[in-house]
Length: 288
Image (cartoon, rainbow, N blue to C red; front, side):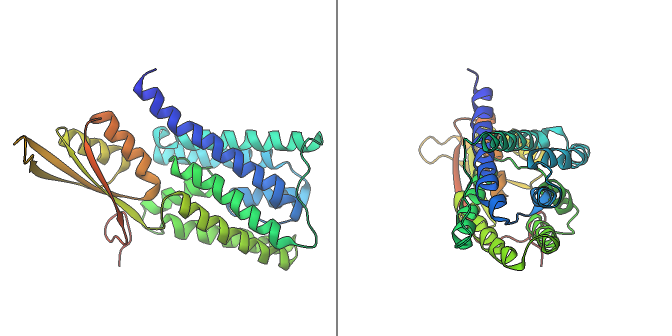
């Protein structure tokens, strides 16, 4: 098998596993206990409560126009893994619905202890999404619009997603009791912490110091594919005396996998140091 195929497989398989776990959490813990979720999936859950629309169908239909907008604004290359995430999520949701209808899966419902359901919903939703995000994919929905909005510098992705989730969960008060909304906040908190944990820490960014013979080519690829600024610094090996370049770049956590793929593709022998960044100011990140 080619190196390119193996790199793509290493990305696609985690997305499939993550969306399967996420779909399981929605149908096994969230819907049976009338909890909520944010984003487009949350709208699908509301439609399920209000009109019994299958979540697999509503999630797919709602994501189609958002995907087309993302394709136009961001390009097909950046949306490829999002397409995989959206289709696989809808597929696994449909599979769960079929298995529940056949009686092969008995969903978890405990009217005496909704906290337990909320906690396990947070674990499964956060675990699934964390795996998807770590692989560089998304499940579509608000993430697409948030990515476009963040490029215009109006909102960061996190701010946009938080606002949209708050609006959708607020609307859910029309269909579910307030106590279920409060339990949903527990689910959201647990899920967010688990996403951060799976993505290896809660820092806003990671810095890459890449020692390579292909500095200019790698810098051009990073600038083109990730739209990130790159600094080139001359270097010389102390033992060999050979001239090299250090490519320095700071990226967001969800961009780490894509940058690693670029490094492997351009120079598999490059020496790379990845450091945690506690805070980062400047273009493309937080500005004060």
